[in-house]
Amino acid sequence: MEQANADARALLEPLFQGRKLLLCGNIAVGLRGLARELVGLGAARPFLIAGSAGTGELPSTDEAELHLLGIESGDILTEHRKLHRALDDLPANVRTALDAWDPNREAHCIVQDFLAVRRSVAGRRAYGGRPPAWAELEDKVRIDAFWDAVGVRRAASRIVPADYNAARSAAQALDRGDGTVWAADASGGVHGGGLGLRWVRPGDDGRDAFAQLAEMADRLRVMPFLEGIPASIHGIVLPDTVPVFRPVEMVTLRAAAGHRLHYSGCATAFDPRPADREAMRAIARRVGVALREKLDYRGPFGIDGVLAAEGFLPTELNPRGGAAYRPLSAGLGAFPLTALRLAIIEGDALSVRPDLLERAIVESADATRTAAGWSATSTKFEDNAAMGLVRDGDEYRAARADEDAEATLSFGPGPIGGFLRFRLHDDRVTPGPSVAPEVARAYRFADRALGTDFGPLSPPINVRP
Image 1 (cartoon, one colour):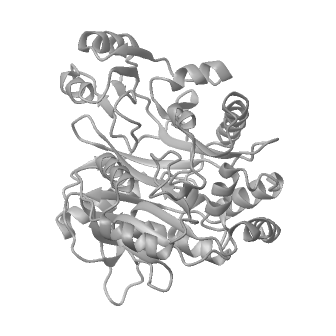
Image 2: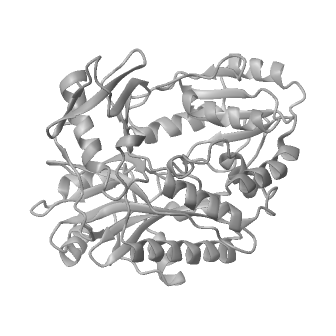
């Protein structure tokens, strides 16, 4: 890992030394780490534009010049789209400050947004942004044809027009006993975080789910609901090879009723069967090669899916970086992974040593496990706060002053009201089991102690223990 870090810094420091960078994103707290990473590589003090402050510690004035747009929204998808519109037409005071910071318009712009494509902001050229053709693979009605073309096994599915009878007929043909999942296309824009998905459960005729999806889609993908642990596998496409990493659990909980699945972040404590792990890594290599050959792709990507009864079945491709890179890099210390990913996309760091990169990330992620989950909530929190938790039987309670906490629950303001993050302390993490039951317990505690309204949530069932 030390050699990989030294090599990455030797590659990146000449690229970023003295460079002016405009960093944009939804949450200011989330931009703080990137600002520190880039300044650590020699970049000038950056200019930050964020939709809202978020939960946690903001960048200090010494670290960056920060401007908040005050974006509020009812869901994460609307939040991202409001940010895009604001970046296309910055408020006058932000534009004036930006021009004072960068009068010659020499800065480059990095938009840290999972829906973003390459875009300039106020005349500052994009750096590390993906072309629109790459983003199009996130369309749920297009990706199954890609799996078939590259020879990746998947679950059965049907692509149908946004017509209730067509969707209902497909669901009846595909249901394996646990219902079906209906996904919207990207005709209204790329979506994520489960906002364009509906679980039509056994006995549900799907009318309500269809009505919601029809407002945002021209076509739907219908596939069986897959029991199992949701997981993802990631890699980075380079000119001659594809380093791939270890599986990451996508913490996904289920309400007692309704159509929505509750995505709650990702963690690396979970271990699939060894054979499943290697099969997932092999899929990632195959997909990475296909991305390079078909789209001249370079940079990070992730494959989401489910460890179902028959093994890992992919459900979507995310041709970009994502939330999983944070737990994957938790043991890397000061390794500049985000900057490296951006430089690879830009074509500036294609000489990185893939063997060192893969080994550093896989070995550190295997050694340093994370057991965490997070979620937005409509419950409003005005200030940042945190409390220690301990298990009391099958539930969490607040730790007393004379007790060592087993976990931490942090909470604070967010663009739709509030935001919570649960983290099991490192000495309490047991490699192997799914993290989802612990996150569900933390949300039950939040409902009791903080007045949130998550309600009863259950974890998925591991059908391949």
